[in-house]
Length: 483
Image (cartoon, rainbow, N blue to C red; front, side, top):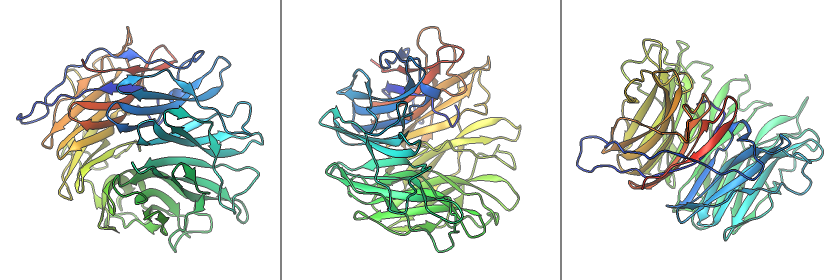
């Protein structure tokens, strides 16, 4: 797998044998080819990053495909009561270019049949604009352009929404970036917006920490909201200070009001130029969140970090303890999708990739128990595999009960082909991963395929997203469900 998504929907059921020491292996049926819109020629660069579920069996996935002319088109797939419906093309906003290049980035569902997808597209003037597409009562409407803050430039704009989250009360929040007027050139700023009852507010500029530079180059890529507290969310990203040093950025939304951003306090051994990246975030309750990311140490090593928000106060980040077999410089890597998940406050799991002492790339899984992050363990691979490969490792996690989680990953088999992997934990013990059997005669998910998104509501119902290499250059999606 790579940072480029090659995905479609994968519905899976995880069966965990209670009373065992670890997670029981599940026997998976062969995956089935997923249906794309008529005339589609595979996934456009394999990009289908969106997966959101209102409840078990009621989900939405979205991404883009190549039409008969080779143009990129956005589409959605709806799962209704466990059945995936025919795909729908998302209509671009009024004023879009004839080939708008609609690119969905994130999605969320308030209730079944009421979801939202956000991303970016190109208008007739050649500007990259942010869009919101909404589903109401099972019907998707034409996407609309996001109204940017008053200081946004009108020529040469490059705006996008990167993340969106909704509560069952139909209150949604979204974050992204845009270009604002600046001297001597436009500067990248953060933008937040909210929706109540389906009506989106105009975007608001993010207020940055006091040490932010004149050209802060703000990124906001992760967002999580407390399901039971509408309007209480957190977002993470990065910004540049006055010395052009990258810092971690954290934003809190409290009762629908976004507060000024705060700087992440890095671990004690962080470099003066820490190169912080906050990759994944989960908020099981208002004011209580957990995040995972990376930073550079004083020795120049790329390490993992964890950070918690406790009762509305963000703590200092701590170094992630990787498996004993990790090398001095583990080159910790997080894919930045759903790499952390929490079943309750202080009970979470996360995963990613690192390099071991032999120079091989491995996946890792780490548990947070009662607010304390434990040492990570190496991802257990099927027989014949010895490494996850540079484009493998853990990408997606979902925890449905304390210590009970599922994870999606990829690894290299004995023939050197990348394969998709599913693994479960029970009472905090991660079991042996199970290979996903692909449609037809496909032998690999390719360097850009695998399982990218995973949402579990219980031990017996999960929905995930993945793709595979259907030919030398074309990636297709697949669906999979246990009987």
